[in-house]
Length: 342
Image 1 (cartoon, rainbow, N blue to C red):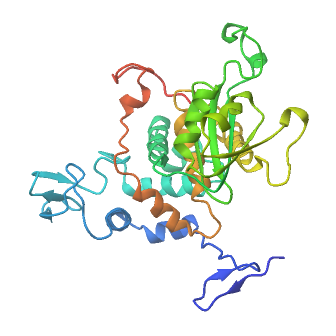
Image 2: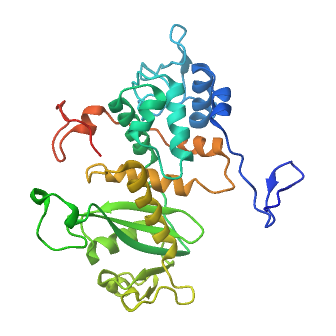
């Protein structure tokens, strides 16, 4: 049985000295956010820290509250009104902010995510409303403004149904394995964060470019023995590169292994198989965003409310309209009668 101790400030920690995060129940969530005023106040503090910022021009001076519109502000310099949700994933929403707070809470605390069908039942809304809300939250989970360093692991995986399980009209008849699947490349820092994204190819040019963008020079990079990584030492000589020969049954050699990034793929695929069930290539990037954010902000020492605040701090510029969400891939956003899938 785990022993819980407390430090001088009353914070709980385990036997190894690591702080134990304070979790939050659904009952506690709604006690903390009983109405729209509480939701707006929390979002404003998480995003602005007491100083409103105009989302239209980025200005911070000459901003005053609107007397006739609660929770709205006017920026005298650009003559525009705004609120804390303007140009975010909650832009122009018709749903109460309490609903959004609950969706954010569920996404950051559910180990394997939540389905749109389940969320529609819990919120009492149509399926497509819950589906749109979840995708807007997933869009805001995308955080590409950081790099990883030290010791990192790089790997790729493939998402999609097995060729043999498809209906005859959907089979490509081009082989097995990765045929018909979408590749996802990822890198995980030992004891740190993860970055992952869908890629069109898994050739040397694509994967090495991904490593260059995600990993700081001077890092130790561990990969498997895929041919694409063979060019890593010669093309990017600022990295120390070691491989483990999976093809010969070698999975660990001293410090050389990619078990951490493979654990990311395990959680992602369990989310797909057990919760989301079907993920289309068109929307796969957002599901990867959600899984990555949850792993990055799921440290056992981070309180639930702090994880929610970290999400809220990065929702600016993450506007996602429904017509853009359902628009055919590669085409302009136009309202088309497509039932949302994925």
